[in-house]
Length: 383
Figure 1 (spheres, rainbow, N blue to C red):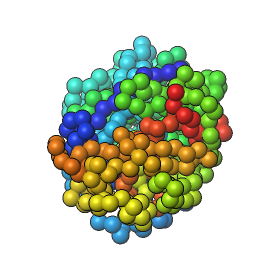
Figure 2: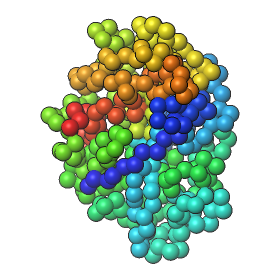
Figure 3: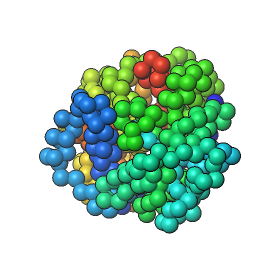
Figure 4: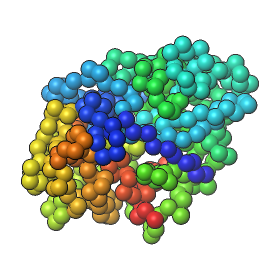
């Protein structure tokens, strides 16, 4: 089942020019997302995630400002879902880096002009009698009550899917173009906790293949649930195993600049909900040291690098599952720092989380399959 995706970006003020105010808060946004879900993993499983110790040690060392952090200043990929009986259509952001599903409640007084979820209008809605709160780095929260209801994407339906009915939205969610968010991560990082929609489809045997796949592009983007859309890729998939079920966590073989290997064998998370490609500070410094005029520029946001626009590399590559994935200059170049500037922002940033995050700067160059049945991630060449 293929779902058309639409792109919404708040990180550019116009084509080719970055939104400096939005970009400045990127690292803090990503940091807070993973702080929340790493803590939730331990609460759900009774054991700390193997990435947690290094992550929390590193962010304590790094003074990252989260003032003004927003929930929606990112590149987001959203599509339609249907909820309730009778079914009502909503738009949601699909995020492989989290596992919860929420929509604005009809009782929400400050949820903008979104389509809202009214449990009393659905004959299959059932209150779980549990509240939820999702915290973000600016101190704002999305909170409300948990329900179960019928949820469908195309002809794929789950009865009794847990969702959050949000009675409060931060300003950024109020102003967002999509109504809610659907997490596609593993159940162990769910804050509710609950089994995510795609995993319920898999568990109930509704899928012809226990996987889902993404194409992320300026146009023609899609999420395919139940395998892969053969018209969107060529050749075969190259797979690498999930190293711990929680995030879509894998080992990246290497980051290369031309024939030079910058770093290798890195714990990484493939995350459709993150825009940039985040590496550790040492790797970022080493990578940009090979590019004349490149420098770390914290005035744009912690961990970001600028470089001359005429020096954007054309030979950056990630070696993933034995496949060399080239990041073209058009994707690596995140845009001019201001209109007409000769200085641009690089798509690889320093996160220093203790793991890498392969966001859209990576995913836009491949067709990516997330295989629940075999706990692995695959990439194939885009058609």
